Image 1: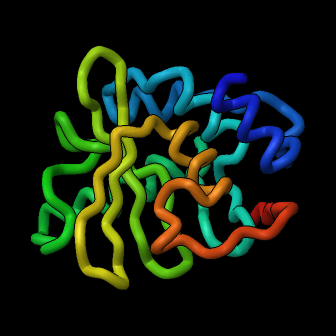
Image 2 (image 1 turned 45 degrees about the horizontal axis):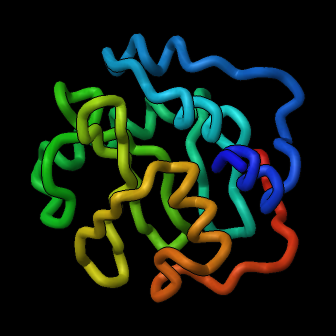
Length: 160
C-alpha cells in the first residue's frame, strides 16, 4: 500500500471535499513539488491533526514559508540553510503545537525528506523519510516516538 493509502487508513478521509491545487505555491516558490507532497498537503493540509501537528496546505503554505524564510535570514540559530521562497531553500510544511517547525529538503532526483527544528530540544533533526512515509511512521509510533505524543486510536482533524 502506498504511503498516501496508509495515511488515509490511519487518519481517515480528508476534511476537504474538493481537490485543492498547488499551482500558486509552486509559482510563488519557483519550484515543482513532488506529487506525494501535493497529495498529502492537499488531503490533510491546512488542518490540525489530533491537537498536535498542523500541516500546511495551499491556503497557508506560502505565507508561512515567507514568514519563516525571513526569520531564518535574520539569524534563527537552530534552522540551518534557507527556506523557500529563497533559492534552493527547504519547504516549510507544518509545525507542532509545541513550536517544532517541519521542513522538506530537496535531496535531488525528486526526493524530498523530512527535517525539523525541535523547539523543546533546541536542535535540528533530519530523516531519510519522505513526507508520507514519515507521517505514517510518526502516527504508528515507529518514527520520532521520543519527541512526538502518544497518538489516539482515531484522529481528530480541525479546520480553521
